Image (cartoon, rainbow, N blue to C red):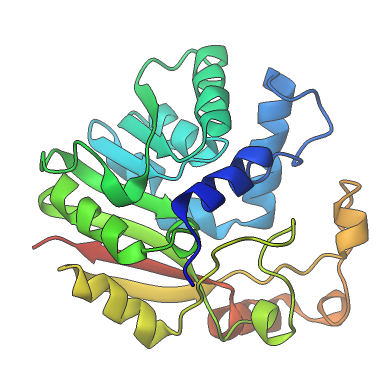
Length: 255
């Protein structure tokens, strides 16, 4: 039986993703600076994929903004950003974050991305969703809404979990907190089919991201690599990420 959207909302409302990325007091500038530094240190492929600077002067809709780290990066680069999240906790944190950093080119709203009420506008240049679609009961509904939102020629950028990754092949749980109600994983072919079924042409699809650190140390904000990554040369690790990375990174176009 498919989990309800309410169970998904309740799960993420109780602990927004990456909420513990800093020991600083939640909601302070120091806290948000830490969150950003840690996120992009551990996942350096995100700025490469998102291409924040490319969207200067253009309209970006982010589906599933979480704490808003990418939201802020798009806005700092000069995009006009609308960020959507299923949870009130995320919405309030992103509003606070935008205020603290003096960014008035961000609007944030709470909404179910499977049923966005304003998704027929063909208004935006980019729909961006990193690590969110695989947590909603019906990802195909979100992609349909994304297609409606985009102008002709607009771009879709999404990250989906890769089922043939180091993470899942070594039986690691999908999230730091257990019992996530919805977690889909995809092969490269399945991810391509999902995007194409919504009407997009896939322009780029590749995998990245293996988490190499010992979890106990990471939770204490130390970065100590686990075996075998502590003895693996950088070139080999980079090659392994391209085969067994946990993130499928997809760029599609509405033609």
